[in-house]
Length: 427
Length: 134
Image (cartoon, rainbow over all chains, first blue to last red; front, side):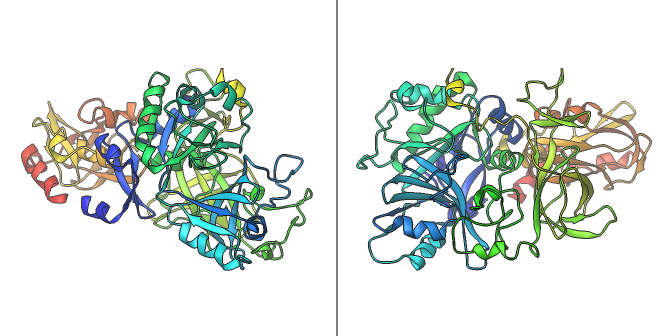
C-alpha cells in the first residue's frame, strides 16, 4: 500500500493525515484520506449536525488575467457571465462566483468548475484534481491575442473546506473582523485573496494569513472553502480544528465528501458528467437557459447540445429504500418495470443522515423528524437512461450481486443548509 | 489505519481465511468478523442476516456486511444450523465496528462437525496470514 502512495501527489497535509490514522486512497493520482478513525458515517453526519473539515488541496486553481479574459471565458464556460447571478440574472461581478462546466465542441464535459471574478478582467477557475492541464490547454487553444495570462497554480494554492451548520462559528474564532467580513456574504460570494500581494487581499485570519474565503462547498450544507498559500495549510488546518473542538468539528475524508455531495444532488465530474452530451440532467442551472428553458442566452463551445437534446440520454437522481448499494464498477445497470435494461448507474452511495418514515424522507436536520429518528441511511446517486422518466417512478438497479428497487427523484437529502442566511448561522 | 500489530485478535476465538471468527459457547458456535475485516470495510451501514434454521455448509455464504465503501459476503467458518442471529445489527450495524467480538457478533451456529472448529486458525497464525497480505 505504501509503495502505491509513493507515486501519488501529496498535499501539504499528507503527513498530518497519516499521523491521525487516516485510511489513505489514491484519487485522481493524489494520495488522499478516505476516512479517519471516526469513520465515514460519523464524518458524513457531522456535516449535517455540526461541521466537518476537508483537505481539498488536490483541486486546482487556474487564474485568467488581463484584457480579453472575459472574452475568453464567456464562450468557454457554460454559464452566461453577463446573466447568471440571482433570479434577476445579473452579470457576474467581483467577489461573486458561479458554477458551470467546460465543454468540447461535441458538448461533452471536459470538467465542471467554479469561475470566480476577482476584479475587472481578472478571474480564477477552480477545477477538479488533475484537470488543470486539460483546462489550461483548452483555454489557451481558444485565447485571442496575447494579453490574457493563464496560470496553473496547482500545488501552490491549498484549499480547506469547512462545511456544516456550525462551520461559521468555528471560522469566527480564527478570522480577523468576522463581524465585518461575514454578515453580507451570500451563497456563491467570496472575499479576499490567498496572495498577500493582490490588491484584493483584504481578508485575514487572526494570525495574519491572507485567505480567499468563498461561501461555497460540495456537501450541500452551509459552509466555506478557504484558499490559502500552500505553506500555511497545515497551520491553518490545525488552527481551525482547535477552534472547532468544542463545536464537534471533525476532519473528514473523501468517502464522506462523496456521500454528502450525492445526497445533495451534486455531480462528480468524470462519473456523473463526462464524455457525453451535457444536457437532460439535474444540473440545468449550469447551462445558460433563457427564462422559458427553450434557448440559451449566449453562444458557447458545446452549445450544440440544445439541438440534440431530443436524442440525448437522460440523467436522473434516485433514492432507495434502505442503505443497500450496487457497485458502479461491477458495472450496474438500470432495469425498467418490465425488466428491460434502459441504462447505467453513474453513482450509488448511501446517505447515512437520512431515513424513510411512512414513505417520506427525513434528515437528521429535519425540524419535523419523527421522535426517536434513526438515520438508517438510504442508497442514492444518479442513473443515465435512454427513456425519459418522471420523479416518483421506480426502477431497479442491478449488479452481479443484487438487484435493488429505487425511486427516481428530483432531490435526495431534505433540509440542507447550504442556502441558510449567513447572519442566522453566525448567531 | 491500524497496523497489523495494532489489531485486536483475541486468543479466545478462531479465525477463517475469509476473516470470520468463531467461538464455541456451550453447544453453539458464535460467529462474527475480525477486527481486520471491520477495519478494512470501514463504517458498516447494513447487515443481511440468514434465516433461523438455515443449514449451511462450511465456507458457504451466510450473509452480507456492507460499509460505505464495499459490499462483502460473509462465509460460514463451520457448517451447521443457524440457531440465532444478532437482531441488534439491523438497527445498529456499527456494533461490528465498535465491538467486533462482543456486541457485534453476527450469528450462532449449531456445528455439524466439531472438528471444523479445530481446523480454523489461532490468533498468531491469523496475524501471520494478515502480515503476508500486506
